[in-house]
Length: 382
Ligand SMILES: *Cc1c(COP(=O)(O)O)cnc(C)c1O
Image 1 (cartoon, rainbow, N blue to C red):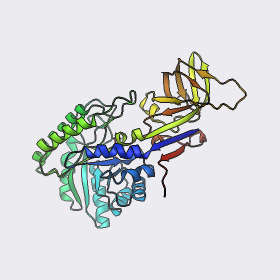
Image 2: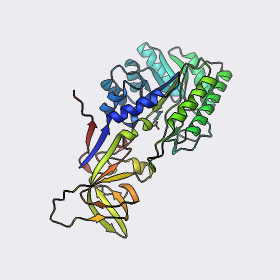
Image 3: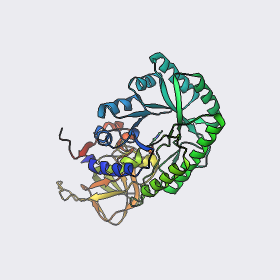
């Protein structure tokens, strides 16, 4: 037994409440790279403002799942082909990450006889709230650094085929503090106000990125979305100028992490050199998130009574266990040194909060083992 199981009703309920709490002018896009499975996209399309894609492949999936859903496109290294696909498909806005990319967008727009609406993605100078990944405020490949911004804006002025309507500021990932996130948005506001003043421009659209977190070490601890939305409402109403007409968010993890579980059967249990190992049918080629983030992923044991073998059934109880997969590498670890009450070979482990960056980021064909099933509830009637 090895499967990803998704609860689409729970997904719809969660995202509806997230969107409903957003204040005026704010819109929630779904960052598709977290999980681009078609049933998720179809569930989300009527609820979110649209999809954020980062490749022509994701764009094609968005169009196939929900042909009319608005799409915005990011990505740090876009080819001319991807830009052309975006413009031809009517992508609403491109998030441009360098001066050369702005040239590239202008060239493609000229060739296709269109005008491209763009946001400039800026890699800000910090400080930022604590979060597990930082995309800005330190050297990374993302966005345009602040000292280069004048050159990008100058080029935009000279290029009639490109209309810069605002800025894109995605700087953190997996931030768990609503207060810290609001502080970061206030920092963004101050930056954009200063640029408007300094460069004599009027921003119409701001994209404040994603990065709302999930606490994988303690699933009962939640990002305070209600408190965040209230604070955001105050921030936007009282301190964002009226001409900032549209405030976009593009969240991935926070929207879809909870709706998916990864279930995998315990094939064997053994002790080696003092450590109790649970060896499961799957592993990090299906679910790379825990190694990628170097955490022990939370799981529950689903007892299975059936045991068909004429052999003693190994079990562990009370001891800390390390959960490893079927790959021939010591790095294939899903959870390390976790106490469990009782687990037997043949039981199933259910890894929670596996809906975001689970299957999507994994190296599926390493060792050529069979893929897990993908099961979506409720099962579509179509
Ligand atoms: C990955 C990504 C997101 C989504 O991030 P989450 O942490 O999943 O919310 C949003 N915007 C950009 C540009 C990204 O690269």
